[in-house]
Image (spheres, rainbow, N blue to C red):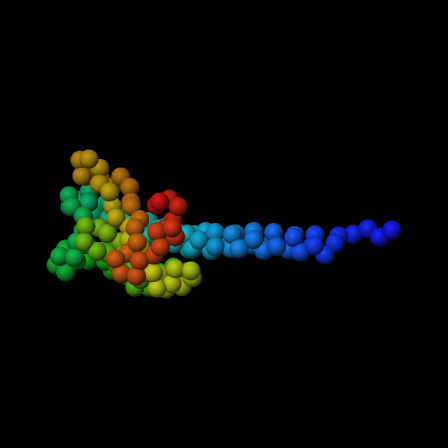
Length: 151
């Protein structure tokens, strides 16, 4: 008497593994993309701190007019332009009006996509209490690929 699996049993197991892989692969890709996007959030943490310091010193968030006038906000814009990471190149980070940071990814799952970080002020308006992530206006990243800490 022979013992073993029948062809039908093996085909059922292969089909189940195929279904599980079809479900797991997209979830894994989104997880990887979120991890890559979180680099943009973490790599700009120093810039976020400097924007908070600018707010405390000047009483307002930096904007493009301040940058053009050569005020300290100009150095913030320069600092943003010099930031570089594994998934975004130097020049991929831009300081916009009201202290908004725009990040354009150049590599990885989010290549040619971008996200923006917007400061949320305290009730008194004198400090930044948190940052909100959102898809960038140009080449927006999928909302489901924003870092988990931003969703």
